[in-house]
Amino acid sequence: MKFLEFPTLDVINKYLIFETPDSKIYGRVEAFSCKSTGAEKKLYKQLETRHQEELTAYSLSPEQNLHLIVSPFGPLDQPSSRKTLFYLISTLNASFPDYEFSDLKPEQFSKQPSLPMVMNSINTTLFSLGRADLIQTHRFWDVLDEAITLNDCDVYSYVPDNDSDPFADESSIWSFNYFFFNRKLKRILFFTCSSLR
Image 1 (cartoon, rainbow, N blue to C red):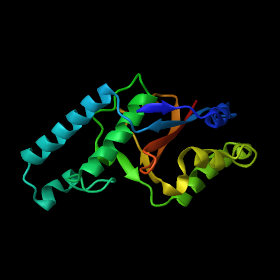
Image 2 (cartoon, rainbow, N blue to C red):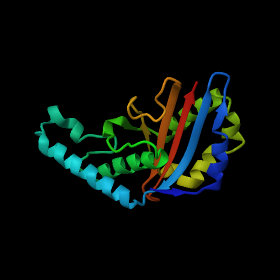
Image 3 (cartoon, rainbow, N blue to C red):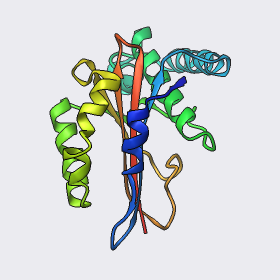
């Protein structure tokens, strides 16, 4: 994944790191192109091999192995669905270089039902943290739209378990991770935010 520079996102990111009376908030929005590096091409081949091994190792009776086919990205027997999983894992690897996300499973992600629901959830969180100015004055959603064309995006979230959460420690209160994936632009906008004691 190639990191894409957007000066307007840099401005937004300055407002996503702050303190409340109860916690410290660390947020950032990053844009990536879906152009794979050499290491990512190797990862894609590994994920493809793992998927084929899983399909071969199990009988494909729907009752036993539905998780091998159904995913938030669509049927995993379709290359485009597996490619989406690869893009999200690669985005996490690029955004958190000190962590390795290659072993993540499709069920650790979810496809969000609608963009307005995601926007409302993020707005509610930012308003409750006293960051209404980010939405109103700093045109948060306009800035994101300029970078990714929000209405053309599928939105996914990553809900990590304790083993795969970069914020998992005793000081973590909550976190969220959203991927705005624009297939036409071959671009992902990643918004991660966490609250720490």
